[in-house]
Figure (cartoon, rainbow, N blue to C red):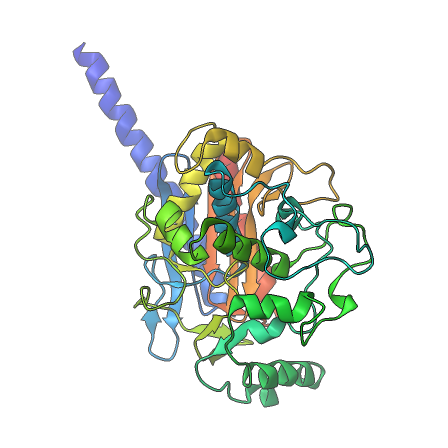
Length: 391
C-alpha cells in the first residue's frame, strides 16, 4: 500500500511537471510571435470540458501607456458574439417563446420578404444558418458609432488602401444612433429609407448559404419581441448570470467595464465604439470569462444539461446538410471543429473546440488590418492547435 501511495505521488508530480513544461513551451513560442508581429496585444486560452488548461496575455492592451495585455483585459470579440445568440435562440425555444421553423413575419412589426420570391416565407432557422437570402447591404457600416472622431490616419497608408479606408472613416465619423428596430426596417422593409432589392440575394430562402450579419440582428430582435425582454437582458439572465460571467456584456448603463483594451485598426489606435446592432457583434469580455462559456458549450456538446438541455445543444451544433452550408444555429460546424471567429475594426477573434477530444482554443486580438495580422493570428492558432490535438 505504501509503495502504491508513493507511486501515485510520483505520477502526480510527473503529470504536473509535464503540464508546466507544455505551458512554458507555448509561452515561449507565443512570446516570439508577439515580439516579431504587428499585433499590439492578445490573450489566449486552452480549455477542456472541465477547466482552463492554459491562459496567458501577450503584448499590450495600450501600447502608448505600455499597459500589458493580460487574461483579465476586456475587449469586443466581434462575430463570436453570435454564439451567444445561438444559445439565446435555443433557450427561447425551450421556454416556448418561439420555434426555429416560425416565419419571421409572425413576430416583426413590419414585413420582410425577398422581393425576388415574395410568396416564400423566411424562417428563424434560415436566419440562424445564414440561408435566409437576407444579405448585408451598403448601409450596414452605419451600425458603428464611435465616441470620438477618428483622425485621418489613412493619410499614412499606401495609396492602394488610402481611399477605401478614408471612405470608411468618413462614414463612421457621421453615423448616428438609432433603435435596432429602425435600423432593420430602414434596410429590409419596403417603406425603409435605405430599402433596396440589392439587400436580398437571388436565391430562394433556405437554398443557399450567404453569411449575413443583419440576419443575426433580425434574429436577436425577434427574441426581444417573442420574449418581451430586451435581448441583452435576456442573455444576462439566462447565460451570463448562471455562468458567473461578471466581466462580460454589451456597453450599457449596467455594464461599463474597466481594464478595456485600446483597439488598433491598421496599426493605429482608434476611439472606442459601440454598435447599433447587438445580435451580430459588440459583446465584450476577457479570456477568463469567455472560457467559462466555451467550457459550458463543450459540456453541452458532450450530452450534459446545463444552461440548455442536451437536446438543444445537439440541435444547435448539428452538422449542416452539406459542406456548402456551414452553420448549425449560428455556430460554425465542420468535420473537425465547432465554434466561431470574428473580425471588426481593431479586433480579430477565434473560439473553437475540437469535436474529437473536446479541447478548445480561444484567441482575442486587439489589432486588425495590418499587412500580416491575419497570418500572425493563424500562427498563434496553429501553435495552440498543436498542443490541443495531442491532448
